[in-house]
Image (cartoon, rainbow, N blue to C red; front, side):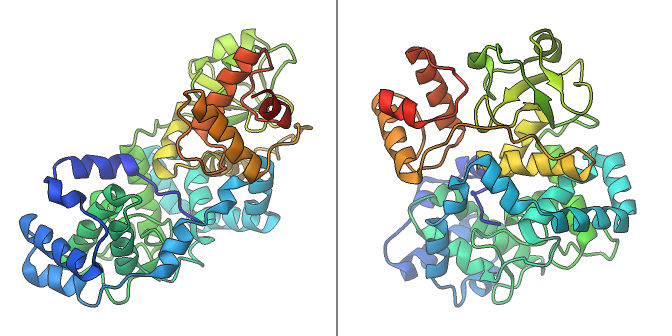
Length: 392
């Protein structure tokens, strides 16, 4: 699955303790690699480990191309979710739940993470371990650290991979994974493996590429550490009344479930989780699918930053645990990638923080759209349309 640079928050924390030279990027690649060796020494990594790790490191043009071509995230929720969730993937996920029932029981006991959540990540990231990526992980990380787009995210991962190499758990020449440096069946970055790697099968090693138990338990530990709340839901499909206050929807407007019920919001296939707060999520506006996002939903953004990926993964998890297919409704036509970029430029010109002008409808762009809809007297459901673009 294409990456959206997961866990930037943790990487930023790791970076905060580094001296200013650690921020360097670009320039001659050989000199850059030599600088990595110097910093490794300052971090206390033995010279032999750093030299063995960096020997033969090269730039990988395929990595840079993949980093700049994440067009899949420009799809709307319905198109994206239908492309990822198939009958076959659902069937395989449920079969894996039965096959690894003992592992999932342990996970629920120790970390409180529901099986569907992990199965969804496992299925999306690597098709349950079948497709783990063929990029040399060392080269991918060094390439992305050298590239000046996001060195603060990837440079710390180089040294985390060095530490794994020093432990004998990373072969610089042979370890492969996703283009953004994630490794194993659930695609974890090296720093996350250091923090959360668990020997799930009891063989004395943490092998996320070959052991489903190791991968699943490690992922559960990571989610738990990121704030997953045991025994609570994460996403639920709902029905919403036509007269709902659309300006009060969206992830930035959570309210107690009791207030949503009073406003006419109902669970489509079961009662809402009373006693919790939730945000009404309309990924394609008031005429499309509707969900209630509970506090656990926020944890998903620590795994992946893409709004459409997160929403689809959370929904897939509910399907794996028995929820029906969502009601797609009849959403208004959205914008093309070119139109979305034009919209983002107009929003930015009005002072809104939409992040990168990339044609992707992320959380920041949605919030800006909603504020402009309120200003213009339009239904403020955060779904950008040609009518809104025209008004701007």
